Length: 437
Ligand code: C2E
Ligand code: MG
Ligand code: MG
Image 1 (cartoon, rainbow, N blue to C red):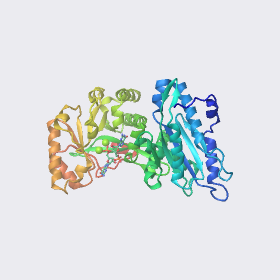
Image 2: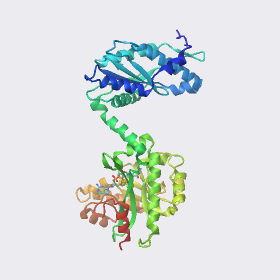
Image 3: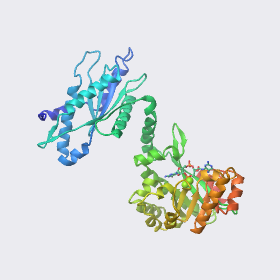
Image 4: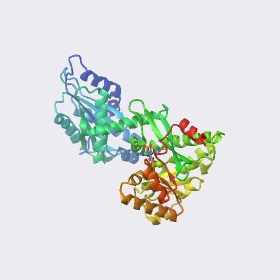
């Protein structure tokens, strides 16, 4: 059986409240003077694979279908309940996403009952362009907790919805404060990260990489910091993953490279700074995989006027183990490439031999063992021998003690970076260091 299509369908969507009345309604129920009148639940609903329907039947038919879905959801809710309870409402918040506010919910089962009703109603195929189309949806549920604000409830149900979607079509997930809090933190970071560059919250710090023979600064690595208004100064380890997953890393990476090249140019132009400046900039996986990353580096070099041979791009060992990374193209710009965190992956010698890299950076975790664990010396010795046989320069990361320094010198490592020499510095401090003989 196929449901009859409705002529008054367009009216239904026109009558759906948008986000604002939904929030007002939630606020009203949650914050009434005598305390909350009732228990409230919010359900976020997303129609599964709606894009496929849109592609197949076109946007207009897709829209019409959503109108019918909206009507159907409304019919599964209590249109008019007792005054104390008020009415449940549904609002359309995204193309294929709806939010439902339920009042008078005393347990998760009440919300699950409503979902079961909607599921049942969706089970009858829709008719689109003369064809039968079956649809399902995913549901995220958030129950009102003590002190929750409307915005919080909506955020929780939206987190629960993403969890449900991870499980696949026709799934639901009930938000649990403890379990899903980390997801909440992630969403918050992602949201704030979007604005961080425009708000001038990013900053580059610079850590010298020095020659182990004479302590001269060979280059400076740019390390990103996010000055978060509440959380303080954040290291990339706290937000790079979120930036990668959300794709924001592409614009952040562009900012980092542009800023680093501009700063390097400023140092080059300073007559008190001796010698050519070389800088090292970290590249993320997503950037490296991007088809036009090469062009974007080229463009930044052109814009800032920095010579390509002043720039080294650091690529972690883990990224090099994935196929389809075209390093030769990047290298053809004239920049140099180094392997960051060397010793944390399983890069084979044959693979290493084929890579157009000029430097390896021995990971801090390996360096940390020097002087503590006899095996660490053996590993570092083997790494240095491999690097030497491919004529690669070697930098030891995270050098913290003179004992490590002595051993690294003994083993023949060329450069070092770490708190023993200098912490990551503000550009002003790094500049003064460059001016010193
Ligand atoms: P990395 O490239 O291996 O950078 C070295 C990290 O070790 C830095 O952490 C640095 O502050 C820290 N470090 C330096 N000396 C010492 C030491 O003596 N002891 C110890 N324990 N640590 C030391 P940071 O700045 O927190 O950066 C962490 C990672 O985040 C970097 O590791 C890099 O992979 C990534 N990262 C930093 N800036 C950027 C960036 O602009 N873009 C991208 N995609 N990644 C970045
Ligand atoms: Mg690095
Ligand atoms: Mg490293």
